[in-house]
Image (cartoon, rainbow, N blue to C red; front, side, top):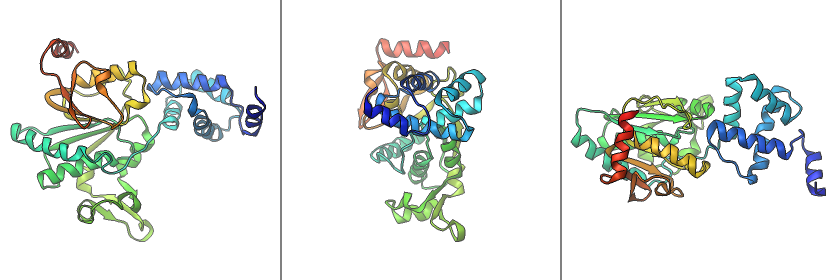
Amino acid sequence: MSALKKQEQEEREFLFTRDDFVRIKSLIYRHAGISLSDAKTDMVYSRIGRRLRALDMLSFKQYLDTLENNNNADEWQAFTNALTTNLTSFFREEHHFPILAEHLSKLAARKPAKPIRIWCSAASTGEEPYSIAITACEAFNTLKPPVEIIATDIDTNVLATAAAGVYPLDRIKKMDDARVRKFFERGTGKHDGLVRMKKALRELIHFHQLNLLDTQWPFHDGFDVIFCRNVMIYFDKPTQGKIIDKFVTLMHEDSLLLAGHSENFLYVSDHLQLLGKTVYKLKTSGAARSSLFTHRKST
C-alpha cells in the first residue's frame, strides 16, 4: 500500500479495503445491473458509510456480511438506493417533448377510443414523468388528456418524492411563467419557496418501484411511448441488450423509444431503427422483425 493510500485509509472513519469495494461492485451488479467503475470508490465509501452509521456498524465487511447473510429486503433496498444516481430536471433534453406532442396527436387520431400508454422507466424524483404529463395536457389542451402514464424507478426514496410532487421553487425557474401558473401550486407560509404539481397532473401518473433486471415486468399491455433516458449508461453492454430486448416486446409498430443524448441503442439491439434525435422505433421488416414477434407470442 502506498504512503498516500495508507494515510487516506487512516483518515477514514471506517475500514474500507479494495476487497470491500470489489464486493460491493459485484453485489450491485448482480442485484441492479449497475456497473461501477474504480473511479466511484470515494462515492461508494461515502454513500454506504451512511448505512454503517445508521446501523451502528464498525466496518464495511461487517455490513456486507450482514447484508448477504440476513436476506433483509429492506436493507437490500437501502443498499440499492444508496448507490443509485438521480440526476434529473423538468424538460431535460427538451427536444424530445415536441416530438412526443406530435406523436400523441397522431396516435389520438388513429386510436381515438384507447388511452395512450406511456412508460417512464427511470422516474427518479418525478421531473421527467411530470414533464411528460404537462406535454400531454398541452397537446390535447386539457388537464385530462387521454393518456395513461406509468413511472417506475428502482429507488424507493426518489419515488416517494415523485409521488408527492413537491419541489423547491428554483427547480422551475427556467420554466415559462404561464406554464408554471397552469400546472403548479405555489406554497405559502411554512411551504413558502416550494411548489407542488396540481392534483390533475399527479392523477395522470402511476408510480411504482421496478428493477429493470427483474425477470418479469408487471405489464400486460404494450406501450405507445417508452422513455428510457440516461439509464443505460449505468449498465454494461450485455445488460443493456437484455433490457432493450424486453422493451421491444412491449412496443407496437408505431411506438417510440426515447434514449438519452449519450446513449445509442443500435449497438445493443437488432430490432430498432433510429428516427433521429435519439428516438427509435421498431424495424418493420426482415428477420429481426419476425424474431421479435415470435418472442412476443411465446412470453
